[in-house]
Image 1 (tube, rainbow, N blue to C red):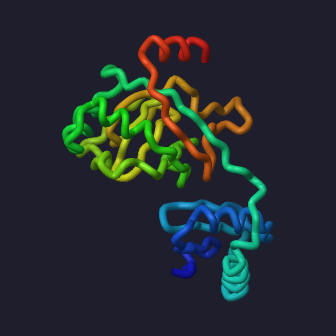
Image 2 (image 1 turned 30 degrees about the vertical axis):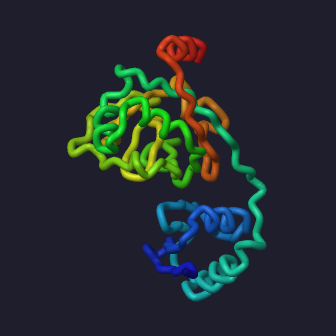
Length: 219
């Protein structure tokens, strides 16, 4: 389906598309003048401009022309590959049994299926550096909790619907928690602060509690 454009404010336009990542990359690489921010989401990309009162028709024509040649517009930013160690110890996985019961699997089978795929970062959002990862085994698709927790520790790995991901900061949230990574996923003192970026690939590697404690200490 070709992308469709609609204005969401006086200076922002929403592009509905089957491939938000490709759309985001094309606009990002184009150097289109006047663009303040480009925000990909699930099934859409939001483009915000620096000024109000734009010539709507001209902006739409420029974006359509750009998207028509998306395959010709390269993004020089190569996706990176990450391996995140995850401890699935019971102390870090209060919802692992819930996911297992929902899927009709054992705890060990859930861990095996969770660590098998190579995931892709589809969206960054919710909190700084939080990557929504696609590629989760369909058997592990589990609804969010009915009542979100008021505080989830940083590094917690969870599942919500068809996505998995790890919390970069301590925050509230309603994902099913099945483990924790000792890695620091977001650090404002780093450049760049976020470990993950759009298009990156991620694999999870199971570790035991002693390895988790050692890596936490080294961090």
